[in-house]
Structures are given as C-alpha cells and as structure tokens.
Length: 115
Length: 115
Image (cartoon, rainbow over all chains, first blue to last red; front, side, top):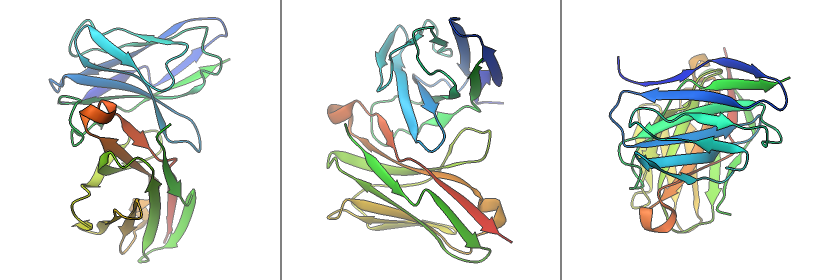
C-alpha cells in the first residue's frame, strides 16, 4: 500500500524539549517537504529536500532542523528554540520537486502540543 | 514575500447550491495553480489544478476559472453536497528557475454544506 506515513499522530512535549517527527514514503519520490499548519492560516513551508543528503530552508525554518539520509525518510526535529511549536505538521512528497506541475502528496499529519 | 490571498475564510452553502472560493496572486512567475481539499485531521489532497494558458478547467462538479489579466482564480463546486464539507486551499507555484518550485498556499476556506 503506497503512501506517506507520519508518526506519531499526536505528540505532547514539555517546554524546553526537542522532539522529532517521523515522515516515511514508499512512493519512490525524490522530493520531500515539511509544512506547518495553524488555524486560519495556510500551509507554511519549513524545509524541503529535492535529493538525498541535500535540503533547503523554507519560509519558517527557524527553530527546526531536518535530515535526509535516505530517500524514503525525512524526519523533522522541533527544537527548544522554536518559540511557538504547537501546530499541525504535514509532510509531503513529490516525484522531482522542480517543475511547477509536480504534484505534492501529503501525509496524514502530526499534531504537536507543547504543555 | 510572494502571497496568495484567499476568500472567504468560511462559507455555508445549502445542499445543491454552488460554492465559490476566490484567490488572488501577485507573482506573475506563477504558472501552476492547484486546489487542495482537506478533511479534519487529515492531510490535504489535490482536487484539481490549472495552468494559465486556459481560462477554465472542469472535473466533475469542480471547476476552476482563471483570469490571467486580473491575477485571480476561483473554485466553483456545483451541486454542493454535505460530503464536500472540508477546508479548501488554493495554491500557486512557479517554475524552478523562479522559486525552486515552492508551493505558496492561500489561507484556506472552511466550507460547510447544509443538508
């Protein structure tokens, strides 16, 4: 069953702790993305990667870090430097990530709550 | 910063009615305009998309109208059904030479179709 999986579905974190969100895809896509979604706002790009071992900052990268050691995996770490981390986090992937018509497919999301 | 402005923020339509969601963009380098549908607690899914070389695209009950000179595009949902109740996002994307293929999302419209 092909697709994008994100885990966990819900995550609770205490202030000052780092936490890592998992994203895995078996679609053989080269490009992967992390978005943040807040109520009443559109999706905002945190980081993206168009190829293994390479990634670029999106519009709101401060307080986040990523790695892309394997094609199918793109974990996101929310660090203690992120001022307001409570949000719904969405991972996406696409075939190549360069042409404008390259469709992005989204995972089911992880809801992070900082206590 | 490149923007896509979406309206209305929320919309209530009677079953069988027409739902209309509007978006406006600023960057003339955008050349691909997808619409995504998101159900609560799920990731967005591509609904329909259009290139600026056509003024209208129809897929079933969903139609995109595109006005290149006004830099506006809209989603029309004909014969709206309660199952269409979801959040809809417009988005825009340019070629890789202009913005490395990043999707820019509107703020989202929450649609409720009353039975």
